[in-house]
Length: 152
Length: 152
Image (cartoon, rainbow over all chains, first blue to last red; front, side, top):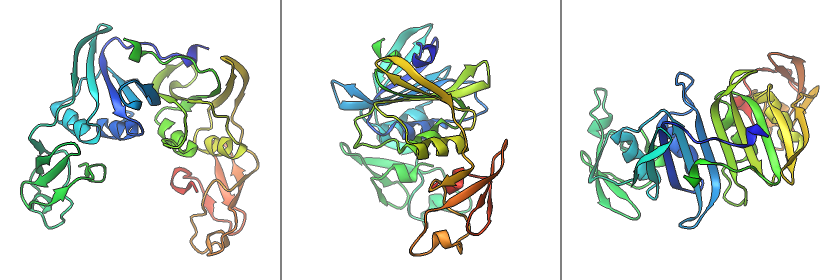
């Protein structure tokens, strides 16, 4: 029953404590599946968690996340923790943390916003509320709280 | 590093040898994520496989698949094998097998087809070619070979 076990990874990233049902959105943020990348990805959905009741986990081999990707995950899965694995050991573990401004992660839902014009500017949102997160477009002030629909 | 291991399941189904990149489509067929179900699901994407080069695996706890679900998987992932686990043991293992007729899995892409009318009939397709699979609507004879777009 070899196929029933998913072995630890040597190098990569574990995104744990993702709210249950949100792992596939985290994959979307990571651009997975991507046939060009030589990366094994493991996902566990609806796993028992002391902290959250139920949680999802995503494990990505040979990938460390950019700051932009971590910001996107912080929007979609604010309870997530990120561990960086090197040589089978957790070298760094942290909770995702929403910075005061989110640049380039979302598209503004206002079609007339200057960030959506033919020569688009990079989108920029200000975090105006936390838990739950609410953002305001830095250009047109449109309020956004459903981030899944507006990922760039 | 408890979170790095996904333990074997007591009861459930392992869908192995899924073509690389197709596991999320298999999840869609299984209706996952579904917050109502008390089911842990594990997915491995882009795993080395002797047979296929690379493959995906989906493991679903406490679920055995209906014939209709197996037919849908056979359309999307014709190389898949399905193992039924009971009490930690593989009780049954088989390749997916496409029956000569596929009932209720796809929607006919022809909007005028009688199966798409206000009082819809259950869709029905005949398998006219295998490897790669081609289907023909039993009502309007529309040919279908891109199944992902037409899952009912």
